[in-house]
Image 1: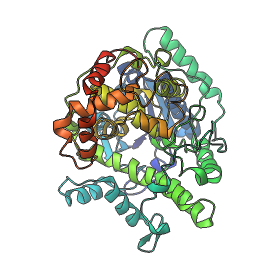
Image 2: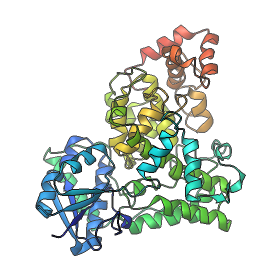
Image 3: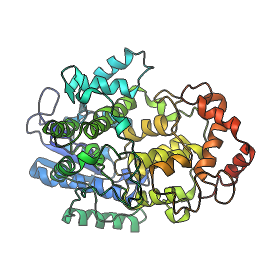
Image 4: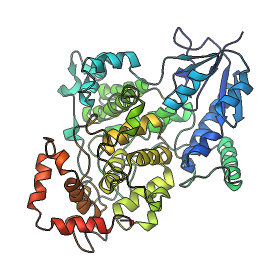
Length: 501
């Protein structure tokens, strides 16, 4: 009996069809299922729904007669329509829910995961060797680079250092409205996009599904050809300037020199090894400095890989971690991406970016959106869900460790050594948001008090007992004792807890 190979909507690159002992049969017929129930379960960003469906339908068009593409209510129903009782192979899915589904289906054999650098068993061996406790990203990153000979000169890291963060955390150039980087690759929409947009409009009109955000012209690749063009454009024209200002923020230049490749990687259109290899080749040719290349390699071979592995290693109960006891619900303005309701220029600017594109880079995610949620004490599970739904590159495996572990410190320090939050001084140093803002980053109280500055001190005060024993937080917590207006600062924070900042 013919064995089909099932491609999920984030397994769209050619490496998911490469045959072999750990892959599908050579020339195996392919099945893809477009399950409407996915969009009923969560209120996704409209641009994200568009991108995923466009990418799936583009891939189906490429596969032609080899694929059976089924539109159904659920995955289970669609698979039954497509293959009946025939046997099926599928590469390890990227979410626990999807893995439970395929494990529960008769006749489905799960193959090892693809689209990542390290097999699960290898990571488990590495992590267990550290008793599952000291799983720091820096240690893991160095292990991956050594094991894959990435950006190495023999046994030594290229450029003589493993970590070039010191060169990659510069504020934006003073007085510059943009970084002046060459434009990123942007795709042209096709008839497939018109079809997707028509279907999404129809589903919304019927009341069957509901979205947030706006679906303008598609900004991110939906095919392998487009993803490769985006990768080559980044490496050839933008990588050299990526490193120094990768943590900077500019209101009129949200993209800066970032690669915009995360959605392509997470759809499976690109393989991480080809991305880091092209970047390393650029350094060896002298086309990009080592700090920029190392920063890009760190994002993919370090952080992305680390988050993927921790998602599976930490187990299902990790999503319920709430070490800080934060229970506040997300306010309506945040859920609806209502940037116009927000006075604070930094949050308003970034929320506008999310509303209009479904994307913003890692520092606004962590130090503005995530930091505000942490300071307000919002439920980390709800924050995780919001990031999952509202970002074009958001998936359960991406957002669960990033939000629970990194952004909201809800695991109590198992993933990171300290909470990541700040007052307005950091935002002012790393961006141009504060100058025209109605609030002043140095002020904690009064009508012009910065919500991040008051929120920072309120957060430290609320969790002082937990944080004062953390060596990385001791100095910050002691700062509370130097505040002569602490009570007024706490009242300032409480008085604006439910209102848009």
